[in-house]
Length: 286
Image (tube, rainbow, N blue to C red; front, side):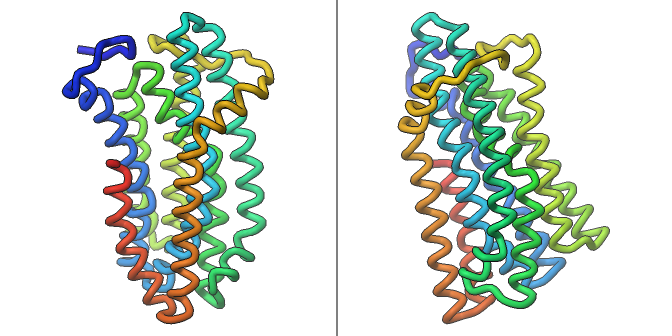
């Protein structure tokens, strides 16, 4: 039986409603975990340390998607509850388009700054070149990854949490299968792991666009909109806690990596990365 946002929620119904979102967050976390699993087993310690060294930069840039998704979905849901579906769809469309354009700009910035950031974190030689390679390839799909994070929240607002779950599972499984193919069988190395992630993120970010631009049975649909600075500001304020959570986590991980590179080198970064993979699962559930 479907659950609507207008229903009276009991604890049992609330847990049923949020369960797909919990699974979505877990599968989102699996992207980096699966990459690390195949890189560490098939490519080696240096490549594995490279992924973990540059990952805070990638996750920090992706925080825009979490902020707009969290803050925007609350605003759009409020507008729907006020009985203004056309205005809600305008807000929804504006936020999706802003995310896409912002993702492109931040991706270009990340591609340009990747060598400087990796050097600042203490990378040199092979570790530096591997970090830059992984970052630049991964940034190719950063706009799609941001959109995936935005749509995770909006699928719930559109009363389609299970569809959002299926999309993220498809993206995650694609990443796993292509990791096995590119890294484990074809031997593409670190580049193969990055490309597998890119393919998975494109599925997670672009399929919802096709769904919401066509006539559908959800509460939301992408279409025409106009610039509304107040809506964008309100979204940023609403989602600022999610933004700061992701940014602070990325900064702290970067500081840890800087110290680990000084005292333990690649071994320290690799060990810390393994611990963080376990932490990702619990953070996703929370």
